[in-house]
Amino acid sequence: MSPRFVLGFLVAITTFILKADGDLVKTPLKSKADIFRLLLNQETLIRSALEKKVHHLVNDVVDIKEKLVNNKKEILYLKHKNQKFKAVNSKLHDAKTEIAALKNKNDKLQAETRKQLKHAKEEYVALNNKIIGLKANLQYQANVTKMLSAAIGESKNIQIKLSSAVSSFREIFRNNVSLQRRKLGFTVGATNKISWNGSILRFNQVVTNSGHGYSTTTGKFTAPIGGSYVFFVATISDGKKSTLELAIVHNGVKKVMTESNTAAPYQTGSNLVVLKLDKGDCVWVESFHGQNIFYWRVPFTTFSGFLL
Image (cartoon, rainbow, N blue to C red; front, top):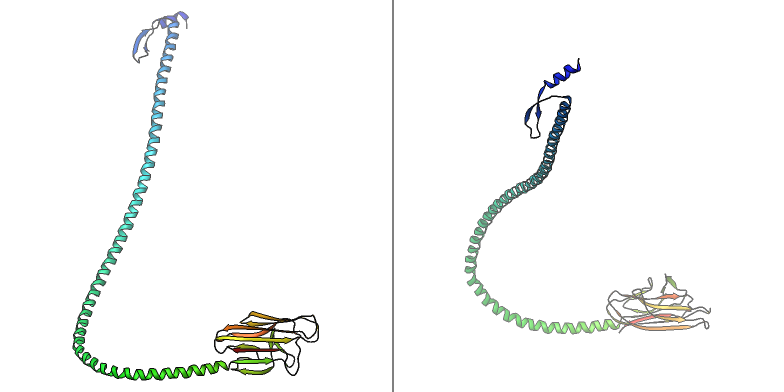
């Protein structure tokens, strides 16, 4: 195509140009420079319009995001509030259930109360009848009381006589007990090799055993009655130079001890103790060290005790 023809064609072109304020204006195009200028202006205007629209879109997106955030917060708040409502509703349901149970229990209590009240009224009537009967018997009891008063007077005289008899009996019993207490005592000795019950000496010869408190089987004295007792032990060791130590024991507790040491053969040892015993307490002699006791047909090693 001929350049002149093109130029002529451009000169003849008239177009509408978009202004910055958005209005269209009719503008003739006379040269290539006008066309390029027109294109540049249009590009600038379009870019500016696009930037404005993009800016508006960005602002709209930011607003939408803020609204979404606020909506999320509001949704979370509503969820939290809904959970609270559910909890309150559950508590209300439990309260209703409890109230129903309490109402049922209250109804039962009222029924039981009415039943007990009826029973109490019946008992009141029965007691009232009994009171009437008791009043009827009151006069009879008064008459009986008069008769008993006379009998009591006679009984007092009998009681005085019985008191005198009991006093006499107590005196006789006290004298008998004193006699029995004086008879409680024992002396035992060893005339042959002693039979040991563990470490307890079982003396074979009984010199005296009043009250039978000492047992040759166990080697123990058992108190038949409570009181203060005196116990004495005497021993002599054999011809060997060896230590012999014996103890008087009360219910498993060592009270006093004797010793025949190794200074010379046939050493003697003795000791005495006063013990407060209760009925059934036991006292015995046991070896603390050694068992080398001297024996003869008449006992040298003895164990004695008696009630004070």
